[in-house]
Image 1 (cartoon, one colour):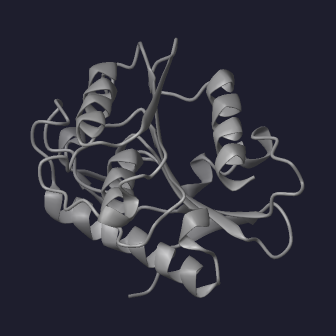
Image 2: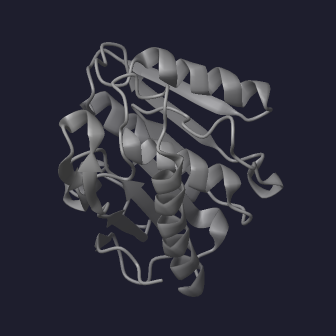
Length: 219
């Protein structure tokens, strides 16, 4: 299937690593594109950042208003009832981006999947079920929507996972980030959990922490 439209940025010629970064509800790929220079990564790291645009669909909790969304939000308690059909369709779309990076001769071990809010729920599904070893999973202000249905891949049982959440988040409560962490640790994953004094957002300290994590994995 054709790839979703996306914003791409390369931090150097001939990238040998890729980061596929998924935005939240109502945003698009441009939302996180400005974070690339803020990461202040060394010039020696040539990374292709890919920021896909979610399709526009009606969103139930917003009165059926059509907006960019990886899946429908059916209830205000977002983890109670999940639009699995559309979420899995979006996960397949992101899998296609991974396929293309592999075709571009990027090693799976040098592909990181990142996602914020809704995008993070899709990122969990993609990274933990992919049957090619990946480089890492970054889950920001999100929840493990497919925890009870996902088919976990053996290839990514040792995947580096960083979960970040705002302690004052009114949209996705921090308890859901903690719940995902507890679930993954019980399943044997190594998880680095960080919280910040913020709401449903990204803060400077978090960006600095992400930068260090990326350098640890790809540097």
